[in-house]
Image (cartoon, rainbow, N blue to C red; front, side):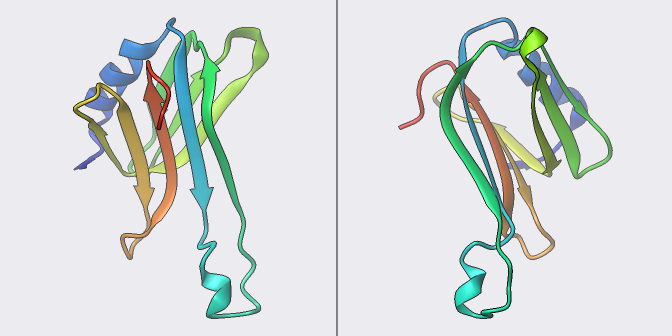
Length: 116
């Protein structure tokens, strides 16, 4: 993965706009850390293969950046903390946010085909 370049990522987000796409969105603050510290409160969210069509997508802010996908009148999909991205060999836009230790904190992925 490459560090976020706002113009490059925006161009890739625009490629998927107004198409039926599959979304993978995942956040974690260290779900596996509670085995080390019983007092650690872990939280996270996970959604995979949500089929949506967004009319507008934006990446904004200094890195770590925020990505929002506007679902018409239905609302938004939003991810904050994006630091890296790539367009993989299957044509999927993979965006991730890594903390200062390199651990995954957030992932937002967009694909025209379901994720396996």
